[in-house]
Amino acid sequence: MSLLNTFPEYTLTTRTDELLNWMRKSSIWYMLFGLACCAIELMHTGGPRADIDRFGASPRASARQSDLMIIAGTLTLKMALRTRLLYDQMPDPKYVISMGSCSNCGGLFQFAYSVCDGVDKILPVDVYVPGCPPRPEALTEGLLKLQEKMMTERWLTRSNGAREKAA
Amino acid sequence: MEPLKIYELVKERFGDRVLEIADKKPDPFCVIDPKSIVEVCQFLHDDPQTAIDALSNETGVDYKDRIEVVYHLFSYRHRHTAVLKVKLPRENPSVATLENIWKSANWMEREIFDLIGVNFEGHSDLRRILMPEDWEGHPLRKDFVEPLEYHGISTVRESPIVRLEAGKK
Image (tube, rainbow over all chains, first blue to last red; front, side, top):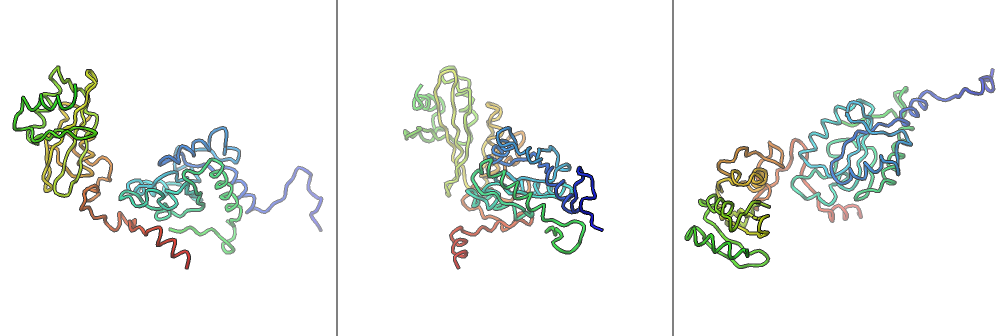
């Protein structure tokens, strides 16, 4: 018997994985955390003009409530250890956006003695956003890319693209 | 008051302990014997003619054969500036703290200690201020050798040109 046209019209059908992913991607809570000048653009992105709250992303003050960490700014070696600690405090599933040249590869400051050139030396990164600093539009696009990535995940089946986290 | 006049005042009072007065641009400076830097600064601070009430900057320089500590002084009352320097040996450089005259010296001296490695005698809290506490060496010294890794994070940095050429192949 076909199920077609047997549900009332207010019912939606979907796959459980997609429902889970859709719910998670629509409430990405990012950690309120900035390292340098990119953090100014990050605040701007959360503000009324760019307003990533449209996509369900809102800042959380604690690592333990966050899904997403946006590395906004130059990562120094001193901060690298603390950043790693914050990342470890975040509950799974967790994501990282590397925002701006400095956290992508060290950028302008990569040869400085105190700078860790690239946040991917210490954390797995999901999306890299280029720019120095990236405009709010660019960061918003990074967030949309992350949402696309989240939609491809499969949580209920082990094989077939199960999310494997490095480290 | 012109900086050179201030230096002459100091010279009058302290004589031999003023090692050199240099009329150089942009800032004429005066080299003081490290042992009497506190006395000289106290005099500049207390004397109503100079009334230097602010230490606007204190910094250190590594010249390979010596280390200099440079004091940029400013008087809000008279709107004049003065630059003092002390020359220290490269091995175990040490000079008295100015914290008791100008409180702002506290953090600036910590920074010089952190990056150049000058020991400030009598400083109330001589710890590293910028670098991590377990950092080894003083990074603005000319002979500073960067460690290969810091807590497992590699500090080896490829030249971007090497990276570009590797990308072409």
